[in-house]
Length: 127
Image 1 (spheres, rainbow, N blue to C red):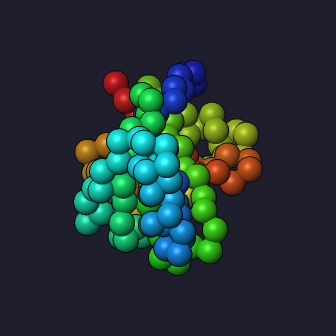
Image 2 (image 1 turned 45 degrees about the horizontal axis):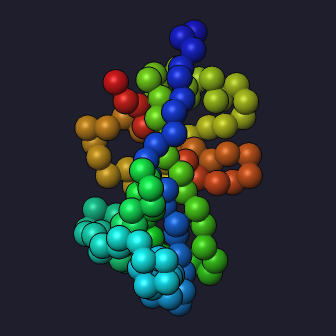
């Protein structure tokens, strides 16, 4: 089996309950003074609104999720060989859970996974 390489992605998504969304956006924009811009959510059916926050070299996505009762954090990982990565992760009990949210880019090879603590990661194959 090929040993896949893993690297951190440049996207973090904070899934935020609707009741806390405006205050959270205001915190990053008004309190911290970060660059914040609203983005299109038409390709993400589980998200009703989203704002991108420049968070150093990373983009922090503030996603409004109408049916969440508490916030959740989602991370992005990259691998050079998705099939080998999935096989290696399966050996540790980590399997794809693509049902968490539809994968929106059919040109990109990716899977949703969760770490042992239950934190969602988007695992994306990159050249």
